[in-house]
Image 1 (cartoon, rainbow, N blue to C red):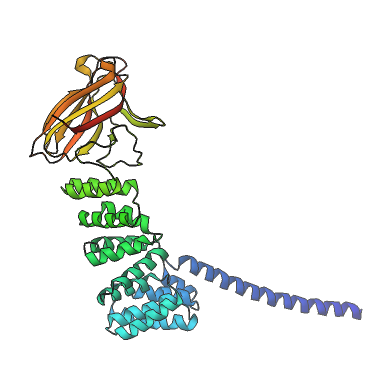
Image 2 (tube, one colour; image 1 turned 45 degrees about the vertical axis):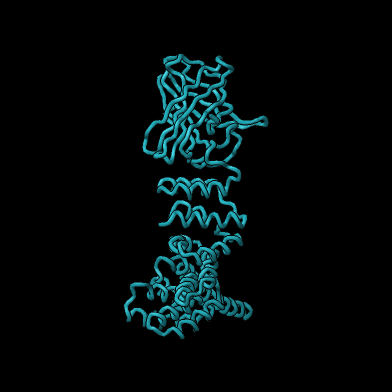
Length: 410
């Protein structure tokens, strides 16, 4: 009988211990769940996250950051400073809390304290975007161009949202010769954001000519722009009437070109995205037009459905006034005379300077030739191959393996 009583006593003690452990485990679980939930909502609802986990310095710092935003009142900033100090007591590495103290000090006009705060912030982490933005503004205010671009570089390498904020500002700044020269040196080091910026700037910004000067300087540093960026800039320069700048930049990317002669007579140039000064096939309304390149040269191949016509191929020109000859060779073109394709040269104001019909390929071994006269009041032209509608069931198809436009010799 006594042994049974002892076992019952030990059983009761064990149950007490187990109950205590269960309560502790439940408390730890509740703490863990609250902390996890607070971290889940910290970005979208920092007030709620702070209420659930007021002991976490990083969450407290995030709330201080929100309260010190651009629209914050003086009372908001005072409360944000209090939270930032609390966050640093909880976690001395809470970098966003340091940035909050720095921003609020700067807004109060206390630049010395702001600089100390941001120096500490940078020591903790180079990834805090607010620290980088302040450093950029501080460097700009001191006229420190290298320091400004150093902080641009750090921000763009460490923040995914920095390009959206900083690219537009940097684009507007490149009209300044000193800034552009410093930016060229930065891009010549090939930072991770460089290609993205080059693609962005080619189609954006208030000064396309400054972009062209930037790209030319990069070419000299052997920083090659993508075909897409080059084509976008050339098209933009031409659209804005900056023909000389467009040609100068194009010639910097395509050595040996001559503005008096159409480029790539044998269709050998292989660009992912052609510029207006390159051959550009036109695919529209069922028309199929491609440049096909092989070991022995290239050809322009086209196919047009019955009863359709329109542009097939074109290339922008910057020909001086004078007489020009166009000549070339075709294969596979068989049409009545009224439905044969033709070359036309037009001024940028729409005036047509003439037509040269491309005969059926069975005539004269497919060779064609003709002349254009370019007047002095036609500074920019476009050479275009046009298809005319045909009633033949097979439509119009064929190939051109060479075409040359050059000054007439007599």
